[in-house]
Length: 353
Image (tube, rainbow, N blue to C red; front, side, top):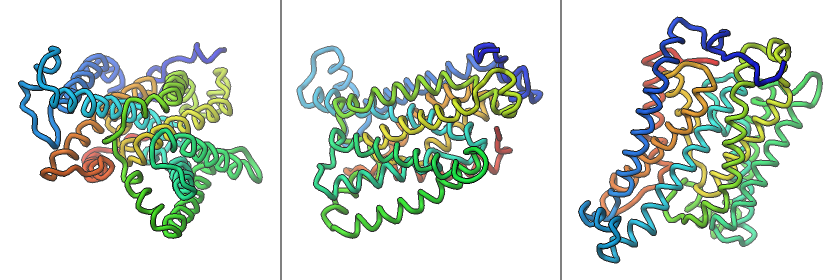
């Protein structure tokens, strides 16, 4: 039996709770609501900023008229920033949903396999040897670090008896994250100039990036997102148990390798363009599971909508929360995401895989 013939998990038990049918029935309405929220967040992102511009001036700019100052602010600064936030948010949301499905751990995030730590270490080393702290210069070190971290995790998890199970990969990822973090700290302390240049990148921000910067990483994000969508049914089958998945024609080994590869591409590319941004990959899948249940055919695509909305809102807050100054969006996602995640966990039962 081919993977394409695997029945929907909602019919087989992955999402087999009593409210599963209701979740499926309201999915179109939820999609419409999330799409509307994304559009609204985009509009607010374009109209609101650290520098106040009358909304009427912004509207006139879109008509092709208006003053040059407003046009530059909208088209050269706010619009690219909004597009980058959407793209990075979608990538991190999908990566979070994938890694939670892969490890069957609802508290997992993209950093659990050491991908973030590997990308960060290689970026710090690249800055140390003289590369400028720009996206075009850091994209390759970030991707190389993410790939090396992934390869190291797979190698460590496969060492000894038995295959590279999610538990062994998680433990290897946690260990490597600690090692990579220690080495990164040493690199930063080794050279003060490296620390200053690294500090502007590591906080996580979509400000000051251009569409050219986004173009440098877009191919990797697109491939990662396509892989994520292609893997949803296989991940649903694996959630039923590896033996059942194999009986349904799903290659467990191939699915796990492709999942880790997709997470590597998504996190490595996003980290290169925006720096490490936390909580998105952890929070978005939780919100989606509360809305539509545990079916990955719904959770993973919806995570690509929820995470951009959260990132756009956080970025807008980053512009206005401190008058006449902006703070890194990574700081805002931590302040907003942590309490929200705690509320979700305390207010409702955490949805497991």
